[in-house]
Image (cartoon, rainbow, N blue to C red):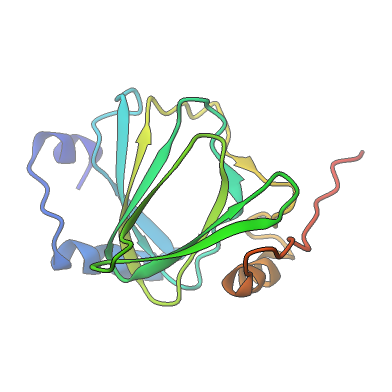
Length: 175
């Protein structure tokens, strides 16, 4: 379904859609897929339904636009949301699961974070818009990049990191 079709049609967030997203994620190199619910990148609120598999690596990142909060609502499965300080120390690790006491979390702007999951998960991500493709996501210097030599090791570290742990990954920006 295209973005235009979604904007013009009623969208049902049901088990068939969840399975489709997870099937698409299984075929994706990034092991995740998404359905965009908003009509354009200029919309004041950006809404995505995301299918995420355990093999998916979400680098530690933040959104640099000062108005851009981010809300995660878990629809099926579960994820762990890790929040970091500027030095790469884990400040919190929250287990967010569909139908549980904690099924959603909103992050304030400029928050370093990552997601990991032990089982396939589907969630809604809602962010303040508009989305500006020219403004890159800020990947933390204490995170591996996607498809780098350190990606697998960083994912394993994220899966086991606890509050107080400091990321062992440091990228050197010196020329």
